[in-house]
Length: 121
Image 1 (cartoon, rainbow, N blue to C red):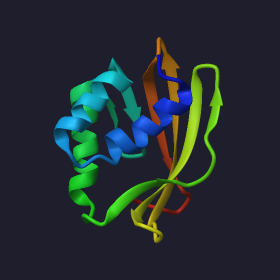
Image 2: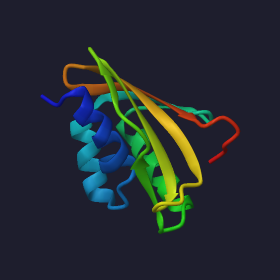
Image 3: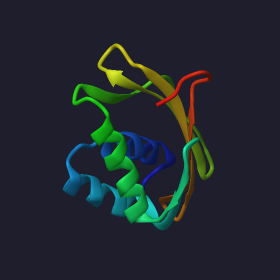
């Protein structure tokens, strides 16, 4: 069973930072509950298909050189975790945020994404 720390990394790198659709889908199916809820300032989506579409949309709209990077330490507790991140060209991010996840039965149930104050995707 994956730890909260491992799930934070899978969410950021294997799903939202993964430009390969097939491996991204495989990561979604092993990382999230089937009815996962993803919330960001733009919308709330539910389920694997909607989460996959959201990740694909983010990556399709961003230049190829944009990558996600951890932007600080992970914070983990019993069934909850947070990971600050940055997105943009390596070493020169244009947006910062934090993902907060809740975990049950070894998979992510909810993801809430917050952007740095004054930053827009």
